[in-house]
Image (cartoon, rainbow over all chains, first blue to last red; front, side):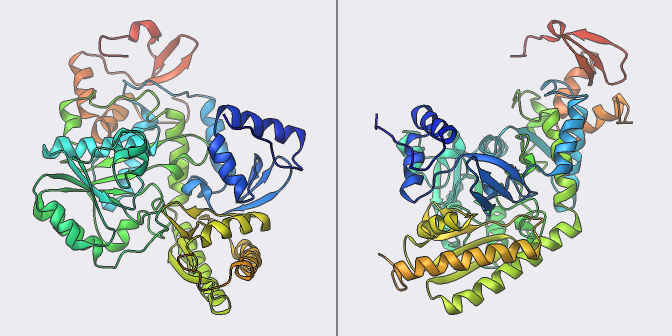
Length: 429
Length: 64
């Protein structure tokens, strides 16, 4: 076990938390963060800001992947949960449930004009991806799953084996015969994989987050849809990070007029206060729900409290004004950041669709350096784990221009300091 | 149920349509269509508040 000394200057209360976390929870993660100058214990949180227990303020541009789309402790969501606690609890996972039925109906109603049919609720996005994979396998009688090599789908057994396999490999849990990968955006590779006739599902992280939100060409998903239809393969849209209004549509894939057979949502559905995720299935993928009522059982999946929270989340996230704000704020950031790029050559590229954004730097570790610099300036934005030159930039759905301007001012100071230290033209360094 | 005007049968139909048709079919076969409503301690009542159950009575062979 490595010896660990909390950073100088931490209060006794913070030291105690860090020591406990290092001893029993996340030793490597704490050390990795501290190497880039980040040492944080979450205390107060409100709207799109949160504070270290010693007081350091951060504007939230990570949002736990969209979990805090509507802000931390959004008052409407907290009120819905508090009111629900007067009547409900987790509920019974065997019986018909009123909150679960109502949420399922609402999810279907706000998705692709009702083209999907059924909903399976799970506690986490990983499990929701597992349900999607199992449903596709049962519907097609095939086992193989194709995903992008830069995709992240979760850390449970099946979801962890899909997409980038490095983590699953490190736990001897990869399944290379059943889980195949293709490069994102490469249609020939998709066609080649599906042409085997053995693929149950094309599992698409619609805009891969951990790769830094690379945007697909406009004809990509329509073509993937056609290939799936031609080869009898189901299309699964993993919208855990991109759905619930973040692209300006309720679901990102809607933007390309594509209807998947299965859709996975999570993170933001929780309102940041009660874990809940969901898998939406079309008639074919959900056929097993007619044959086997206990084909999937989860004690916590579709908790009634979570369902009531998620109802409020859907009401707020899918409101036309919210979707319009996501489009407007995303466009505003893109325009302002591209203006900065003209003055700071270290900033290479701004990827943007609604408030799904990635910022690429002219340095293979540029986003790592920017995360640290932004942290010091009071902004929390994380590097993309599979491409350290790209910063994930995740504004909330309800931010306004004043908030955006404050964040941009902090961003420019961080950018100036990193560019001064590391200069431009450092690709591959 | 407080604040929700749907009847028990409406909830069951909605649940069968969007969540689990097979489960509802099984419950209908058993003559046991029940939507949990009020709950307190080790008792719960159906959606219409008419019947109460002790939790242990709900244990079935398939539960876990």
